[in-house]
Image (cartoon, rainbow, N blue to C red; front, side, top):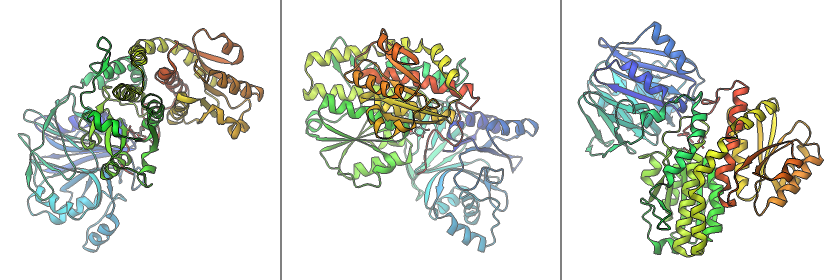
Length: 609
Ligand code: G6P
């Protein structure tokens, strides 16, 4: 939600910042702006709409300066407009601020500041910060920011510059992500890693309450009370090329096609076929404690929640432990019964989703052991959980999550197979059979991807439908939910995911010639039941597209369209069945001319409640 970039060094700040913002545009894209210090004064450009609009303005009215900050916005307070676009200034125009988060007491502060004569130009919560810094400024920008932070309540990642202190960029973090990039004679601020990959791999992940002072030759981190503190510098191994489209029309398509590799990368060095064992380097919980656990809570949002639903099956079937799955925004306001005997697994691609972080903190406070499945090294979730298992998916830029989902599934298989082996809840030969099946997944996904042209043809045929039903059962029920979510997210078509067996209890009433059904009907223990559900839909005039196992002739006769997948143990089916549904959503959105990578109203990382 909102992306921030800050720069100080020898390059033209405006160029570095717009380049970085392009890689953060997935975080918000309803308006954008940049401010630099140019010949001793603040100059800024702002515009409504995507960064391309700001780019046009910058081409006709370039910015010149070596220090600057920029922002791409996902509106919370105040509609998308030029006035509400960041950076925001104080009354003098000498101080500018970019902000990601929400200042909860901004109305109260605004009232006080207005009574003191401050003039407000926007409807945002952010603007109060600029005016507070102005009020507290006595020649030292850093001190003025520290003073200001004493009065604001809420969540923020901030970037601040002032023409009265031109050799400094200040950053501050509280419940919203902010990283520092270290260069030679230049330093950077950003909301997320991809923004800085072309410039540096040396990064500091700021922690809650950190305030950072950047000059071109150095970076110092402080606590909110002004004490200098040491923060570790991390070397990021992600490749800048991974954050580019690499010949694909959209990031989403590229990321769908990367899945054989990203799953392999997540498994590699952890699953040892020859030695018949799994080794999870970062999961430090000892076997005694692990085997003493009697309940698992899985908590996440969005697509990551759907991965959690698959996880429930795996924990119950392999580890034989009760597992509950919760949406983080619900979990945090319920009273989940958590104690030392529970394991809380939080799943988050970004590691910065506000509700997931809150759920993690609640679990920790309650004594539950916490394990994070996360894609972003150094993110809040990965730092705060007791254990973390990283998915090695590289940066995911498309707002609709694809490769992160299958990476999360791969992590869940690793965790549950490992635990089952340690606990002895599955027999050795079954464990060996399953890890061998699992090992084959990347090559099977390559096979599934060959069906892309058929999926594209189906998408063309069905793209004018306004409603869709996705059905699945057992371990493929979450895949039906995920298929529906993908279609909603990027093509704005109403879609519902349902457990096929539940259809009779409501959704069957919707079925007619205008409501096509996508049914996951691969070979499994519930295959016959799913066939029955297909018959019921057909009997009511429904058009059925089936995801079926290669060679299944029965399904060809019973359905209107089919996508065939290689045969696979039903436990691992979700890793395959989700792929055509991702492709289907992608192609429908393409046919409809929707903005695939940046769907309306959404943001990749939801850092506000
Ligand atoms: C947003 C994104 C989804 C993502 C969800 C959870 O809604 O658009 O793609 O699944 O947040 O994000 P997380 O980073 O916690 O997995």
